[in-house]
Length: 332
Image (tube, rainbow, N blue to C red; front, side):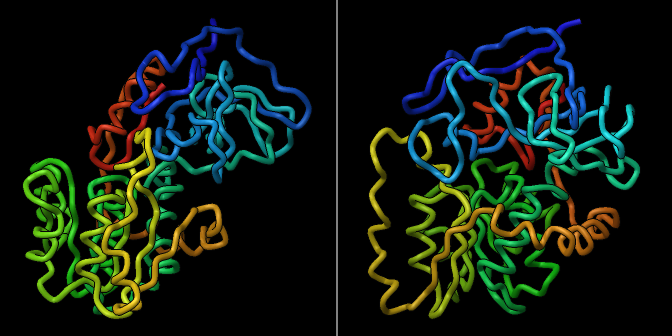
């Protein structure tokens, strides 16, 4: 039996293609001292990975051409050289994009598959959930009574942001998405007060109509036209958490800055960039607060699951194209 790896074959220029990936079959690796061998069950694919495919200086180290990529994964321990990990344990770790991983035990976390589905630890109870929680409450300093606008609201992060805001007493929560089905899901299933398809009309017009009294908080996953619209609608002393800008990730030329940024002077709003790595201290508080909401069904989540590790590159391309609702995962 062999192991399968997904490697970066070449750096993309603009929109990535399948040619940028290489699928390789290799021998199953052997763990050394202090390591465990994990058979991965589920892999996470995330928008931030697009940045790591480039060699531009960024907050995360670029993937190496010719080497296996990596990202969040959950799997079963097959072999262990470490006390505290036994074959059969289910662990969360950072060496995805492969069927079998040799993981330093200090970088693996045991999870309880009976407490929640294992996929939840890569999404709503994992990095994406913590991103939503920290971004809304810490970075954007959400307060009860705020009107909140979330772009990319049907994604893994945005869908949790909107629901948390509602559960914590937002006056109004508005989301944007790219299909009518996603818009319906936001309002009918997740309890958003309003949502719109950003392809239907200029975002600035649709946001003004959805938030006639303006917005107090903007959670940005998209950038570009959405960010300009949020600046247009934001109220005095509003707060923006800038989490992602998926609309410009594949640009080959730098995007123009928001053309209305001068409004920051009169409106005195705050824009703060965020990386979830700065907020890991909130993880215990986040799990304690959010896990019961997930198990009770008060906080809903959706997953788009693609079967087969060889389909991971296509799943990633589909993610960048907005094909997912909620968290995009690959079942190995």
